[in-house]
Length: 321
Image 1 (cartoon, helix red, strand yellow):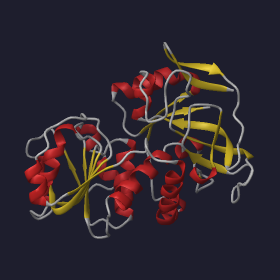
Image 2 (image 1 turned 135 degrees about the vertical axis):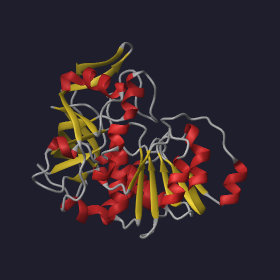
Image 3 (image 1 turned 90 degrees about the horizontal axis):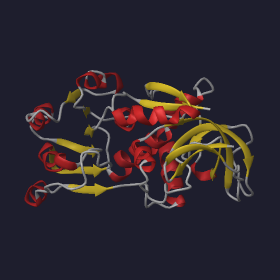
């Protein structure tokens, strides 16, 4: 089968052995993959948790159909249309508990491939780590990314009173309202914290989901209410920064760090179960949407990665098999 494999000279399309479904796993014939920021790190030779390294198959999410069932798998059938986490390859073998059924027969594989990482990341960040309650206000930092776009919609679906999204790109910022933002802010504007405070009656937001970190860490605390929560999901703006410990104490902020890189298969399966319990009706009714910026054939993966690295896209970049 074809797969995008990391070599000493970078990623390359190779023919490798097709995996088999071990006990508790399903084998999926992949029809589409979606790109994520972590793919750039892996392409550059860096590990993303246990993923990556020379010889590894790149990629974090896919959509396809079940081609084989491992021993002990129940509740799934051959031919089921599914989506989940895995690599840029014609076939993937994954734990059955991490598989999500594609909720609508009219949802294409290209569309479905855009959802698994964002669903798991944002439901876990908002609902579980962020302890969100209906009627609260939510700020998504880095809202024009695929994960951020879905995060705003999840917050709205779960009953947020106000959703704020950030983007430093004016064209992307102008589109955030399409995906649930009541207010779109520019964090390169020195007055952005005041804009958030004004939008919340001076109180500050209840929950911030931060995909940027870096220089936003301390300003985020100024934008959060007393007893607010901040969930550190990503660090696109840097991993090292000034942290105002006194402000943290004054606001009595709960600051939570999350990542999938240190989670077990059992933890990911529980995250999947929790999001399905909350979001299945919205998924089936297609109340969530994800813009697809561009689609490339699998053999065009290098061009797709270059487009992501240029950071000029809105929504997701997809590979079609």
